[in-house]
Length: 204
Image (cartoon, rainbow, N blue to C red; front, side, top):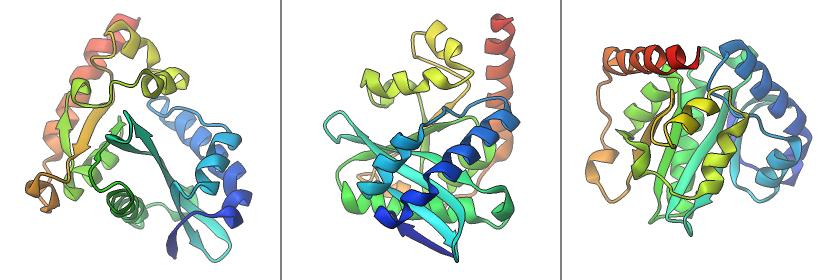
């Protein structure tokens, strides 16, 4: 298994990346915004992504976006193909994209938003801190990217202050972010259930 920064030779995987994201979103029923093949290809060509491959087989992917004049970097679109799950690959991809983001944008704050407890756990162990949405980018284009998510109405109803997603921030200026810490799944699991009870009840 290799995890590398993307280049033109990886364009051929754009279709399967999009399909894998779409199927995962359908299976979960929540929390993943759709992306077009053209969008994924742009990330691949610019080298703003990492891809995991086992030989010629696609295994996983994650990409980078910048906001607020590169003050913020988001690691987004994390996906692992079903054939390669339960091997710890997601964490390896997240670690690689975090290291690459720090290398490419050393002064930027790095963040992500997700509903998945597995990704929350990975982020926490890598040094991300749970934060409010007000501590993330104010660039409207980023939040507009959530429109294809089934939970977008929740984000809209709360004036972009809250959603089922949890925001997590890695600030390279804070030394505590470099420490590997124990993870308490009960805390974020409870937070997720509270959000679901609050927002999905209103949705009905």
